[in-house]
Amino acid sequence: MVSPNNNPMVVTYTAPVTSGTPPVTSTCTPASGTLFQLGTTAVSCSATVSEQRASCSFNVTVSAPPHLEKTKTLAFGDSITYGAGNTCPGGSPTSLRWTPEERLMPFAELPPPPPTSYPSVLQSSLRARYTAQNPTVVNAGVPGEPANDSDTRRRFTSALAANQPEILLLQEGINDLHGLDFYGIPYNQGIANLVRALREMSLEARSRGVHVFLGTLLPERADSCRAFAVPPKAKEDLITPTNNQIRSMAAAEGIDLIDLAMIFNGHDSWLGQDGLHPTEAGYNAMANAFFEAIRTKFERLVR
Image (cartoon, rainbow, N blue to C red):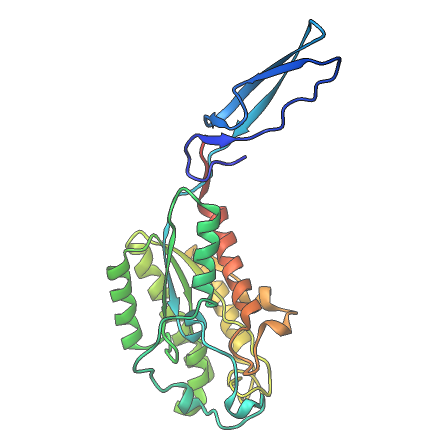
């Protein structure tokens, strides 16, 4: 069993079965219902049956909870990090009321992120496993934000300074792709600018001693109201070449990559009605991907 707080804990066990002609008396040391220290404790039991003495022993092991070397995480990104909903105007997945211009409009005031957002789910998962610690995941997602933007870079620097994270989860860039046609930016140039922005943010975080996990862009479902990075709303698929460049950049810089696009591949139900934002199952999948990356990299067993 695992101590939830790294301290000795009360252990209750079933006493060994005794049989024989009454009266039968038995005792165990340490007794059931008493404190057991961390580690393995031998329990000795004895019984007197018809004036004959019998004994047995067994071990009770109390383990320390797993330990996380880094507990302060910052999740930085756009509406997908924020945890936005996935419905279309009028409830139709093929509605044409959403335009790239509307998608790029800034959000003046945001309510707190929903509990279904991947940072919220991730924090709950971390706290459930690392019970002797109090891991935090700050949700710094802002809907409509592009990665390649001077305001984004200033917000990023401020978020690092304000939160002093040990881990950065960076997943952003779909709004850059949505704006390429609107602003008349050539695809190759726009993708290169986006990937460069992700590289610069990753390296800035690393220069502050922050470990970076970089996520690829999620897929989009064609013909949905917000699927502006794939045909028919885009002239060609923009997500695949962007993710290929993100993968190459991460490999060149030694940045840990979380390939969310591959994780979402074949799970159409993880994208909502708008074809852009995840469903609750999709947000859970994102949280689990980052959880496994953090666990693999930073979990240590306390002995």
